[in-house]
Image (tube, rainbow, N blue to C red; front, side, top):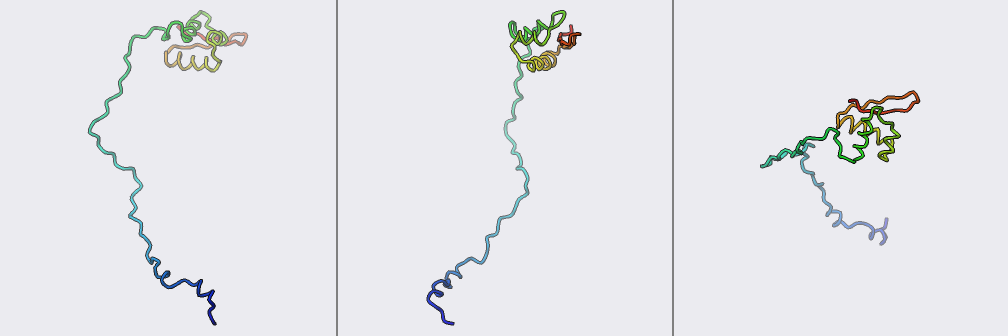
Length: 128
């Protein structure tokens, strides 16, 4: 078989083939997948400052606030309906219920009594 000039041009020279590396790079040793050890700091953090515990008012709300308005309505002998509370504050029903449960019931530690009248209207009052 005779070689044509085209075949000799496409063949790779021996110099290029010999220049390829024969060994692959070896990766370094793997470490355990663990969080690094904490360093000891020279200075410890001081505990957070707490707000002074002053004497709170019996109502627990500022005068003229919406919370004070709600508490005044709830202290009436018959209590207050959600519609009255919504009209006094401009809040939506879910906000009234959340305020009664979270702020009045849990934060102020007042007992809120819910009664349903014969007409199906619900009233809320603070148990004295």
